[in-house]
Image (cartoon, rainbow, N blue to C red; front, side):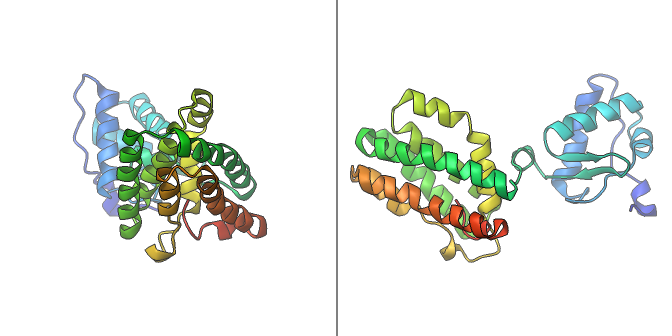
Length: 242
């Protein structure tokens, strides 16, 4: 609950033009700066109305927009809470056990075939992009930076499928990109040491070497491991990273 100190919300009175956008921007800054901490309840609507000098509808529209963006979560009868510190982390939700298994199964089907085809179809430009992306991903793992790992890991797998140069496969994979990111968010655990996280170095090497069989095995191997963990205990999948 908010104490007396929370009555002084660090907001400036919104101008009369673009009220909703201004309120959204101010609320986003309060979330990003930590003034409104992750997981905590934000000040009630009446307090925000008074602090901003705007109407209830403006505040409600701003809260609704930030809820859709994933930054805030409205809990009926309980208030509004900070769900994420930015739109990227807000858009990526964690998956429950059965749902995670289904996503990993689909990923395996598409990514194994994508890797197999990429080993025979990749261009020098594909390899440059994959190498740069994997380097960024590995650096993020070393920092245990969850947000960057989610972004770069999901992008690496997208680039790998794109290197297949099969437009139908690429289109199918694009349709699950957000879900892929969610599966990465679910399985990446920043509390374990960097060296214990999944490495995709061998996968990239197989594609670079033009070895379809090895590329398919590498693409399927880590997903099989995650699937076995989900099968035995949904919570155990949060051990390695994607």
